[in-house]
View (cartoon, rainbow, N blue to C red):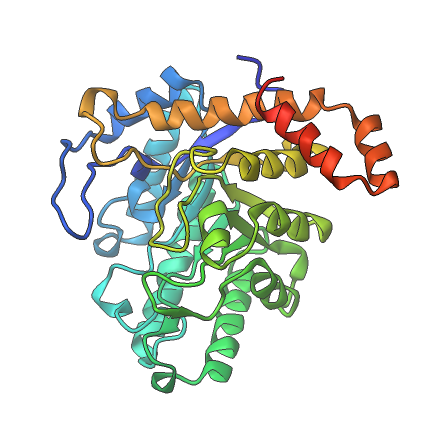
Length: 344
């Protein structure tokens, strides 16, 4: 299928065993090499990494050992014609980050989080990417009185500045989410992420990653979040997926719940030529009922849905659209879009 200049990525965690908070895994774990083969089989271009996806048990390794192991991974990817889109430090599972990472009340935990993030920068360098994604998963509270939100915001800014100072080439993409795992997050939307980035020592190297489901959980439209970030030249990455209402983060296949919502995300990305700026990252998981031998169709479906929607966006009669907007005939415009989506 024609990719129209777009490149696609996903993370190894998107080939998932199917566990959820109420039940155990239902599919066997696949080793990293077998997952890499899926990238090639499905036509993907790049890998997203958590730091310990690339270098397991990195907390037990020296700096030189971390770099050496990352170099081995890079060679394995190169042999398959794959590159790395970004590295993200996993700052939400270690016992030190129970009460937050950069905003923990414990100064030792904050120091651990910063050193862990610096190791992720080093891993990214060895893997050939300068893009660091920060999902601030535990930067928030279960009850507001437990932390000082003013101080926490300053702590986040200090951490960003420290990382920018650590490596003069690193670019940082903040990935907002309004809740989960924390009940109330400090950086819930694109606007919060951008505001924080603009206050750093080098705003030119700080932007955002927009995840569709996270925007929906915040009660926002993902296409508006994309457009807002792109208007400032700050959309560094995306996690396209879908979400069925204001529930837990579902990571459904892109376009599987609301095709029109997906259409509008593609419309903004394609209109403003995102293929020249970054990759189309997916963060999708197979539904739990999917048998193991066919548990990668969610990745195929998401990429092909995106590309089919690119075709629809480009086939839309823009002159007609503009005329209807000028006439303020939005009902006819609504019908035009619906017909487009129905293939009429």
